Amino acid sequence: MYLIELTNYCLNAIGAGNQLKDLKFELSNGDICFIQTDVTDDAHNFLKALATLVRPVSGTYHFMGKTANFSDYRKLLPLKKKIGYIGQDAAMISNRTVRENLLLMRCFFEDSLSLSLDDKAARLCRIFDLQDKLDVRPGRLQVADLRHAIAVRELTKAFDVLLLDRPEDYFGYSRFDLFNEILEDIITSGQAAVFFSRDRHFIETFTNRKILITAGTLTKIPI
Image (cartoon, rainbow, N blue to C red; front, top):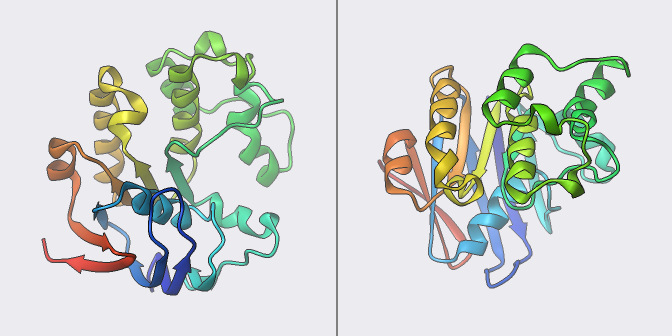
């Protein structure tokens, strides 16, 4: 059984990209998949689709054999819980503090409003210097701090797959090496990942699968 399987998947174009049509894609545990493309927006679109942030024109999305239901966003929440997404389109709820945003998914699934940050979340907040910003709303954060807070939220999910959209731009090079160390720990534990990056060292370090998206079609590339 595949972790993620897209069948005859079609997506409307975004930005300067192409319509992505009749995509067939499978992702298994342990796959670290690099996206190579001639149009940046096509990679963004594909990653957003994997994150269930865009609804397909047609086709089916299976996660561990179960078909994703796009008719109601609440039906996607159990699936989103298993997917970490770090990219330009990730956001926090504006009228909740950083702490509340970090706890929101747990509060929903554990049906409790009196939770505190677990050890992993607290550790990542220290690494990204967020301890004194936890009770601030996202709109009052600097861009870098907001991105770090989103990264902490996604990395502390009990995810099965991690999606990364140009992490070198997202974190900035001053924090990119630190993120690489965190990611290496995740990768060695067997989780799957799909990413788009232009950082050659990052690509060569983590990739064990490649796909090519060109002119709206997806092709697997031997590695």
